[in-house]
Length: 441
Ligand code: PMP
Image 1 (tube, rainbow, N blue to C red):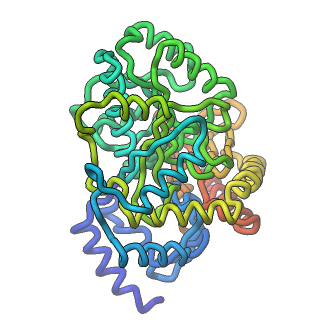
Image 2 (image 1 turned 180 degrees about the vertical axis):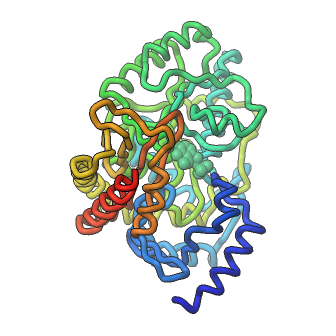
């Protein structure tokens, strides 16, 4: 692959000059260019233009659940694209893959979620959920219910509504004007939710939104009773409960949807990422039968919310095949089993490395806290996790650091298709990478 090095130089120069990367350290990109120019993927592995092979320990962006390079998805996309690449779903037009997917989603989702509104991704899904929740209250004659409550370590995307809902402050501070009527509450305190609803007046609150496991915020797992308490509070005050399953959906946590760990059901459920394992752009919001009924029976006018690509036939066909693979290859059970192995592996890392504090995980979502001092859990002044991420990338593992709110955390989310051997090599590379950095500190 040495022969590719001049191509890499040329592409790197164009990358720096013409490609404004999403969620990226601009100065680093300008100084160093792309760390990898990926060309191929197979299973849990990615290959770059220089022939380097790495384990995709993040399923790219928590989304490539079935792993890379599945020909079936390419074939189904090609087939659907050739037959009917696109048609509108506005008004009363429809298409078969979208109908079949909406039906399938109602079969596999928790509680009485019945109908789906499709989007192209998670941010659009969440923005849609806020608008549909508010419109529902308008239909019910409660026009004052417009405030949306979310949590301080949450990530809900980057559309203006979703940025406003996102609790992680740096994302909100990136812009100097946000949407009104978004409120934030202490991360895992159900009492704080109750206090906020009472302070604001329940008649002003439309919905509460939460990720079953917080992903981008650092893989934070709620205390056991938290969601039960939260759901009770929502019911008591008539507040809609929205789960953001953009990361936790489609098997990531070892159940179909993350909220199933907690024995409660949402009124609205947002999803994206794993619905297609990233093979096509798709997201959506599911509505409970009560909410759907309000829309279908009480709406007199037009539902004035719709994206050109809502229910895109190719994306929906890809999603159906992806879900078929998740089911036929028992990938949710695998996520459960291998999730236990991941946690054990991270505990081994903790035993072997002097700078690893808490480790945690649920299914195939895991986190490792980097600390200066194990017994006091004191942190380094400057985060060390990003250095470990760079070392791991050199050693053949992609993982991610989270440094918001004084955190110094590594997070992991390998494909649900990972096997034991691959998982052990992930853990081994991680251990070597942490030890190599530890030695220099
Ligand atoms: N919600 C959650 C929980 C997410 O993790 C993300 C993306 N990481 C989003 C919403 C936004 O999704 P998208 O990037 O597809 O807009």
